[in-house]
Image (tube, rainbow, N blue to C red; front, side, top):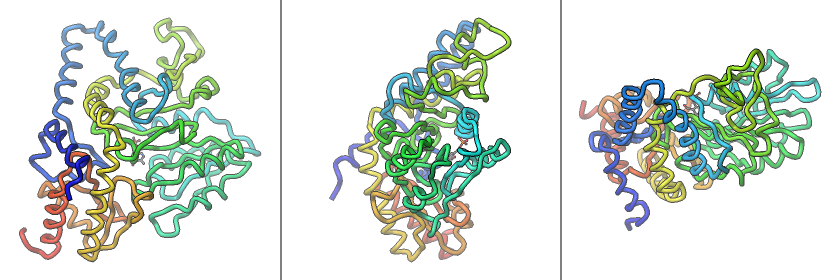
Length: 388
Ligand SMILES: Cc1ncc(COP(=O)(O)O)c(C=O)c1O
């Protein structure tokens, strides 16, 4: 039976003309480009060309406009989101807000963390942090009780992923936040793998900070990452990783010390990457307009279809089966998967491969069920050595 929600979302395909030229199952890594992004980048360019330095009066407000578009998707209050270039930079800003003492120096996160986040916190050990990594028993899931047990009175911060990049496992954030609150620790939630495909309500989750980007399910391309700061925490922190756009009056050019803005801009650094914000407009608007609940409903049906194919072809599933644990992608492995992935991409069946995890694919709101069939059909052909 055709699901009416899934079917109605196919209306949006016309905004993504490049879908007609490929099978795009790579939205967990790079969302498809909306045609409007080219127009919006053109607007950025025209402003530069026609208005020169006075373009800043249009460009700078785009930071807050992008933040508002993100706030709508993550259910954040106005004035609690600021734009950055990437999650690595955001993590460094947040780490620079913290001071470690012998009594409170633990940084607890899952061993399946996205490496860039881990690199930032491991480097914090030079400043007195003690990182505790909670292992995964099966390489797919993370035991919430083990996470909670690792969080104790010495824990300062818990920087975790909402959805694990290599397995699409959804962490039980509420439980982890409850434990962190009990001991006075902050949770930083990296939502890169959830925003745009798993409904997000940062206030309801109760996290201190959340961050992510626009590259993946948001279809906004690189350079438009975002940071959410819980309202009551904004003025409590003064990042050492800072810059003049974090100042209360950047154009007053006061010297020599930083005097932080009294709003979320205090988490900013130097000149914002404006072109990326124009480029990200269309994707952010489309996701906000559709609403992630509908996207999730379709995603669950489509990922189940993918899992059925993985089982049918006798491959090893490396992502969770239960719907409530499943993010937007499906991960599976077999001998020679990396080579098959390369060939699939050469044939424009877009997917990726991660060491020890296998091939990752992600249907999105614009995916037709027939494309899943085409994808696995092609994979089967390549595996059997046919059709080269
Ligand atoms: C969970 C997660 N965090 C972070 C990133 C990327 O971080 P950055 O924006 O620093 O490139 C990715 C993927 O690119 C990711 O999957």
